[in-house]
Length: 137
Image (cartoon, rainbow, N blue to C red; front, top):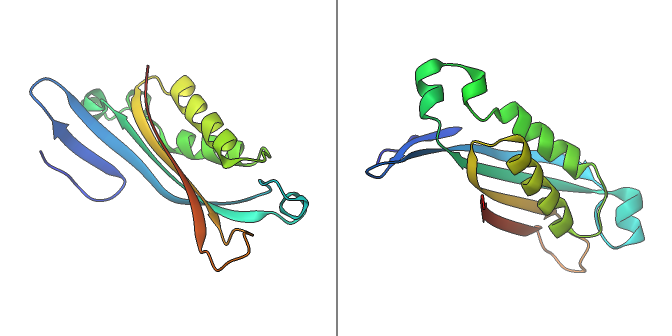
C-alpha cells in the first residue's frame, strides 16, 4: 500500500482492485439548522469534511475530468444541502450522502462529518460532530 498526503490518497491496493480517496477538509458554511428558534433566526457556523472512495484508475491514465469524481461538484453538493434548513444534522447529512451517490456513480463509499461550531447547548463545547460512513448498496 502507498499513500500520499493532501487532497487525493492514491494506490490503496489489494490483488484485484485499486481504490482511491478524494478528501475535502474543512468546508466552512453558515446555516440555520437546529431545533431552537434562535438557531433558525441567527444561524451557526458549520464545518464539513467529506471523504469519498472510488476507482480512479482511468482518470490517472486519461487526465480527463469526466473520468474522476469532481471535487468542485462535491463541494457544491455540500454547500447547497447545508443551505436547506433542517432541525437535525442527521437530515442534512442524509441529503448530502444521497446526492453524492446519485450524482457520482464512481463513488463506492464515503465518510461525512458535519460539525456544528460552538453549539448552543449550555456548556463550553467547541463543536458537536455527526459522522456517517456509507457504502454504495
